[in-house]
Image (cartoon, rainbow, N blue to C red; front, side, top):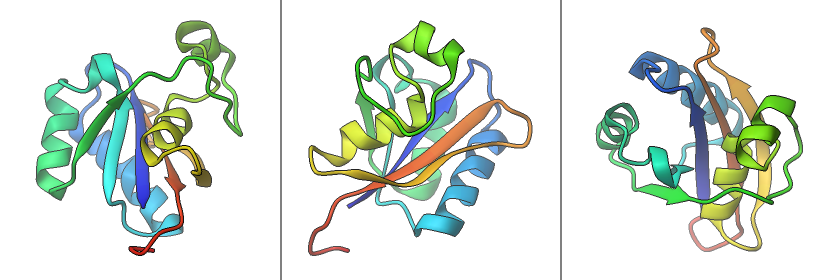
Length: 122
């Protein structure tokens, strides 16, 4: 299963989330699900992205999840180095690994990363 994790600032435009997701999918293949912070999973922008892409959206908790990259600001705010990477890892499951590290949208309003697990759909 391939899960695209998304981190985004409040008020991020749909275009920012789409750009970050497209960049990650160009390197890691098509996402089979989207994941983000539980408290942002009802945000209209990410709901619109999930609906547009016809993908399930998984809200997760990310504190304490180790990630390949680390932003000091995100670490202080959320207890993990990258919301995108941590969300992808948690949603993809315990055997998941990062296949594409976080990529930022050109406007810096969103990041996306891909995690994957082995399975029949791979």
